[in-house]
Amino acid sequence: MRILHTSDWHLGQHFMGKNRQAEHQALIDWLLNQVDAHAVDAVLIAGDIFDTGAPPSYARELYSQLVVRLHGAGVALLVLGGNHDSVATLGESRALLACLSSTVVAAIDDPASQVVVLPFRGGKGEAGCIVCAVPFIRPRDVLQSQAGQSAEEKQQSMQAAIQAYYQSVSEAGRARQTALTQELGRTVPLIATGHLTTVGASSNESVREIYVGSLDAFPTSAFPPVDYIALGHIHKPQKVGGLDHIRYCGSPIPLGFDEARQQKEVLLVDLGANGLTAITPLAVPRFQPLISVSGNLLALAVAITAAALEGSAEQSVWLEVTVAEDDYLSDLPARIEAMTQGLPVDVLRVRRQRGNAAASIVGEVSETLDELSPDDVFARRLAQEELTPELQLALGQRYRTVVTSLTEVQA
Image 1 (cartoon, rainbow, N blue to C red):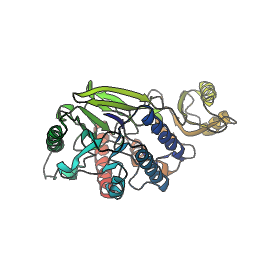
Image 2 (image 1 turned 180 degrees about the vertical axis):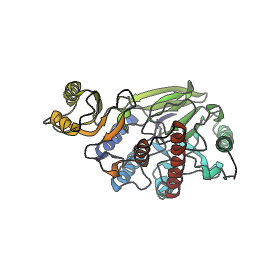
Image 3 (image 1 turned 90 degrees about the horizontal axis):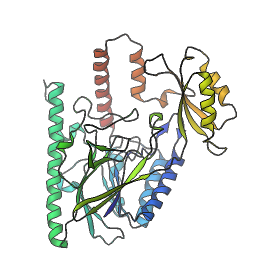
Image 4 (image 1 turned 90 degrees about the vertical axis):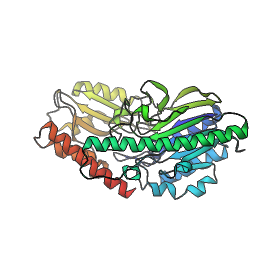
């Protein structure tokens, strides 16, 4: 059984005024070619297929296109809900997509219903793999708030609740595995999924942290013993805790300038009667040049010219510019614009670097409030106050807890 593990597509992402429809269309075309070239049996998307709970129509169309084209190729699709996805939006088409070889698990339910059997390619229905399909778990799904609990007690309660849910789903998966083994006369491999932060995972700016105020990271030892664990939420591809069978595949396209230098990939996961046999990363091409440059004005002139070589008349380079040393100048946007005149580049953001301190965003080119996340707005407002680090941390945690609760209500 060969599974293609991917996650965090964020269809419909609005990136500093830019539409990413062309990138995602190119990604789908490339993915379908890989599915054929590598004889993939099933595709697994481990959460965040959409960027928001109410994705634009073109994002829904891309999603439908992916489903239809995989079905036409005889390839099963399993989609897990992520923290960006709306349970209602994903769930509304479950019955229809089931007729097109696709299974959608938008939210947690009865453990037995979270066990999904993925068939071998070709539509004959022969079981190739059993999946304990666990999507993003919202605290309210597994935990009741108790008055007087400390932050540490809430974190421990949340970890125990998630671990207990994984245990119950894995038990249902084991029962299904035993039944299929008796029926087929061979062992069917068992895997699990998750959309969460795990201990030891390396994150980045474009990942919205989840379980804020209740669980910072889920320990790898708390996962059930299965052949492979397909994770989503962290955009950087990586093993977790040095364990080969617990993997984040990462996002297939850069979702922020902090990911611009990452080599994006999807994972081919080979499973047999004895469990996991191989994991093969497939490098995803860069469909849109996304480059971050930094330095003083003299260095930037050279760096911007070099970056422009990756662009063309048909496709410009999206550029983030961080100005060092000359950051005190008030007319930086105009100077940067002059440097880019006639070059195939679009400057999406200009940052000023304040000495050796962490770069702080103080001016944006063609930026509106709609293009900022709630976290961006709060961080900028907080930076204007003279507060102790402890108080800043406390306010940040309280703010993210409020935003998370609002997001969950909307989802």
